[in-house]
Image (cartoon, rainbow, N blue to C red; front, side, top):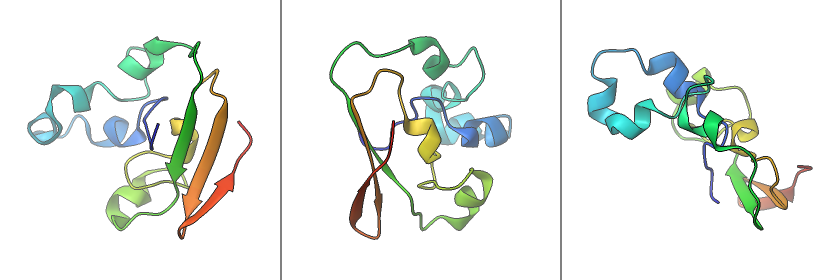
Length: 101
């Protein structure tokens, strides 16, 4: 998976209640928060081979300022991890680095 919001995105938590947010992201965008009722929170552990690659840089400084670092401007690196994944890597400055699951 490439930069997935497996644990939800803090962006939805911060901006989801702003009028017009759903018009921009659609209904699916409003369901990707980190609260216990969000779709990612209900998925549980994976039971198949899974690797996740997360980015650590963004050109969107506004969105990055809302997220815990490191992040890719849409989701924090920590939120991309999935319980049960086999591998996890981060990309920064075109360099792939291994991170402990």
